[in-house]
Image 1 (cartoon, rainbow, N blue to C red):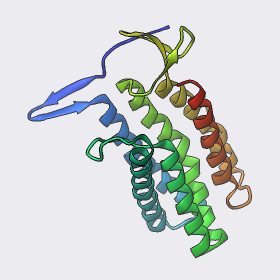
Image 2: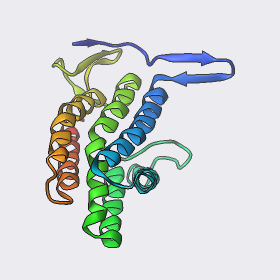
Image 3: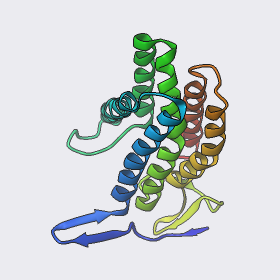
Image 4: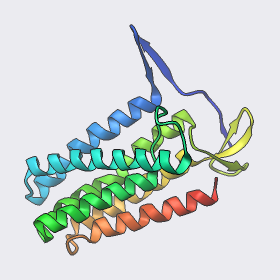
Length: 201
């Protein structure tokens, strides 16, 4: 069982920096840089890739925010994101890219999808540091000895899964499958992880 420790917090002058925020920043900046690198290696336009990355991020976060608050009924002033909403936002971007650019647009979407597991893994590492996704009571491998009792840490579960599939997804993308295949597989896998997580709550 994993021992519990509070989220790392650092004070820098008037600013308070949390481990969660650091992980999210690393995920976004690193993901953007990696997406541009994948674009270069695939002969895609880096400027278009960068724009698509930012657009996917904005749409995903917006839809994720809306779904979270509509479904949970949480106050609109309270931060929060729905993973299902993020996935729906990403799907909307994929459909939009295909509708506008056809198969060539799906090549960009596939490149973004090949980066998604690493971005998601680092982001979920932040969730694990913050312990903000506590699951059902357990004393198993992914359980944390929380003050209220041992429970599964869903952030850790999803972090491990994301890092585990990052290599195979990268290999699949490098093998140049039909346009849209990588995005489809990553999307289906994301939905599968969410279904599994729902049974661990």
